[in-house]
Length: 136
Length: 198
Image (tube, rainbow over all chains, first blue to last red; front, side, top):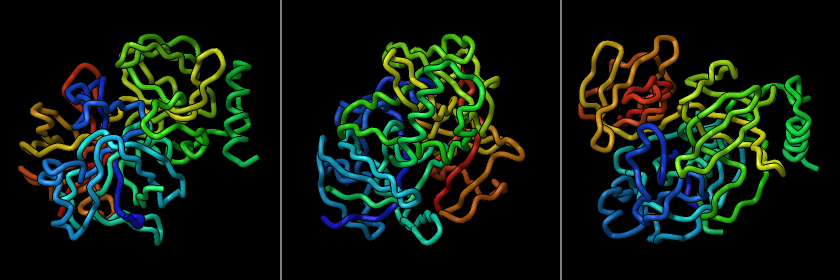
């Protein structure tokens, strides 16, 4: 799979405080905010039927629980490796959304990282960043 | 040695020495402080240089935090620590009961010397149930969240366009992502940025 360019955000999972307290271990049952994990829009048939990145013209490969992706923040060049622990983001709700850092841009939401993983490559207060996602 | 490692070593040295004064690093904005991280963590594994939970005690420049998994964390704040609580702020604004995420360097005694602390930060995906004066009512995973607009701080991003203070384009039923600060022990938050699709 060639690297895919798009947008990343972050989400909490596992034991948590505040509004995050209602979340659980994610679709894979293993998700924890403090682990290097992520949500992927094509983690299963059921997942795909919800996230529908194809409606935004994106063809993301089927990758299941535990699969490793490597995400590079296009604003900083920092990179983090994570495993699939949940289904998401819901790409179809954000078709065409674009984030840029100068000339480095990402269009459409393709990955959500846990707070631990996101904060390794970006500040949590940024909320959204352009990224490239690869498997090596 | 690269700049990140230099900064981490300086921060750790400052924390070990109990320095409250300048670390030699200066105070960094939250958007920049994350760049200090250089640890290698196996994909899927917990990050030893990251902590989350709620503050149970503030003592000097230390935060005692009870993790959501009941693990206890001691987090040391230095002058080099960036603190976010709806906006970049100072240590005196941090209180017992606040939730947090923290990133830094884990010291040999188990203390986390913090580079960055995000206090009460939430990033919610929700639907707008209703719009009131300076507030949004959100449906978030079956729960109602009251999101307050903070004049001069809250911003809206409509489909990737530059952030604006005008919230008037937000509509009931629309999906939004809301980055904000939780009001501890309530179902309320203050809005930093609300992202809305076109």
